[in-house]
Length: 123
Image (cartoon, rainbow, N blue to C red; front, side):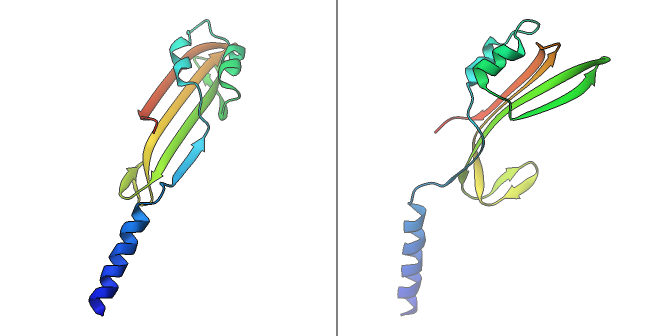
């Protein structure tokens, strides 16, 4: 009887693992190919806004004595799983599937500089 219970428990765990994957998403998808078309000193805030929509976050800083606006776009998709290390801490529920981030620095409404990073592939 004890062995039947263990076998039934193992079967339940196996069947549960075959279900549909659970995802956790933050941010919103954006046109990642647009990063290749950004031109320093030429692309304007309005052009970026038309192509990507409103930024997820904005910040104002001083660089070289001048005010710089930073716009950030980010999309992160994680899949339920085990043992993924994120930012130095163990997250036992989710593993990274896809992450795209674009930070754009503007000076006088024109792109000063930008950084684009991408991890993983869409599934």
